[in-house]
Image (cartoon, rainbow, N blue to C red; front, top):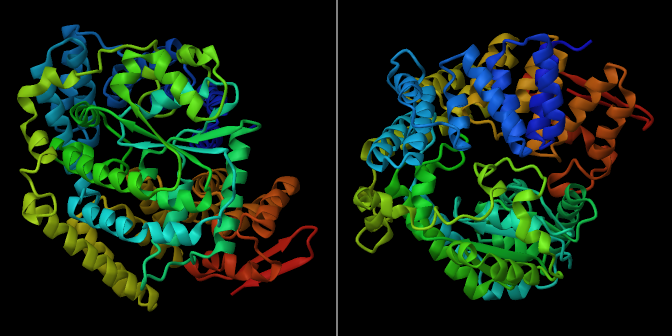
Length: 613
């Protein structure tokens, strides 16, 4: 019988993969064995909330707080569903957590976000804003300590690069390169601009599947790099490469959407990658969500996002600076993008749900279905911060919400106007910028020493970074890798585990954690870590090879062969390029090189023995 740890690892893996039903069942198995695990009750509640089972979720959050009254995240989860009253005793309990000096700053900021939400719901707006300011200040400090800064200057340069690269001449050159499929649909814009609501309405149509916020396009763009002269990306912008990439990505969408005629990726940041989208899919549709920027900024400022994802949200001025750059990029796409684009205005959608929803369905090339007006009844998994809101009938209390806080918005309004030059470095905190530059230089030097094989010097440099930024995820990760190379696998687990707590979206970190756990004989946890790596990057060669080998050694032959087939036939190369058997040593070479040990793989039924030294 599996242990509680094994059930928990599997539940986490399923949750990251989007299988909330499977996660719920495994969390329940954990609680059957360890009924007093407050964190598991909280995680179970989160999974249930994603499925729209709100009453059950609330009971789980309340149970977690009975077991662990200082579990700030359970309070925040209750607040997200408007389940915290203005009862003075409950608010006092949360306020005590905000002030608790012995509580981690991450937990204190979480409690402050929960308290701010409860005060906002109660109409105590000035108190709410003061609390949200404190929450964001603490969280920004915690994220800066982890190496997570928002750099408006770098963002401006990124937008400049995109505008320079994706010109009418570029799109004329690549016309016809990709796959002519109408399946992919992309919802883009600023976070909290109505993207989840638009996806929920569209996904209520019988021929549409909402896939949530997928990482695929951003990862692919990272592989290709911008098509600029002098830039040498890992993948070349060539027709054959683009077509293979489109085919692999389209297959993923079909797997997610089953037989749906339209599959929606609602990752807002795909607005940066629409040039790649147009190259991959000349018949894709783009839905641009717009909302009053004052409401967008406040909604972001009032929300505690997953670490490492929305770094601009911790200051209203940064929210404004990012909005300015997104607007600049959108204007460029309007001029040059050879794709159909529909703008959905949040305020108009709320005022005329029927008319705007019919326009949306028509844009998707589908016949109208009344179920789209009953979007709140649609049963599907929603894992974003809007999971509660999109399951409520349409309401207008979020329109013009900024008026409740207008006396606090001066920094935002200045950033949104021409009064501030967001390209001027003096507009930002000099101390943060100096620290960021020092860390970048030190990390570059450490990586150079690591590549040269001088592990002692690399470790020294990484530890110097850690002294400046105690929770820097990349530094913790590489110190863990070095510990693994030296056979200190317990240290590797501890360091890489800390890295993942800070930033859980890096597949390499999950892979390296899995290897260290495997060396310690913690096979179930290692499997979960490798699965997490593949959730974040399904075509990860080393994870496919290593997990397949581990399963084979455990006698799970059929599962192992499935991973090996993905490795050999089409899932191992970046963007799903086919991998020939003779290429396998290179594909899994990183596994051996990272830890300085030989690795042997024998693919059952394939006749391909492999040894990497």
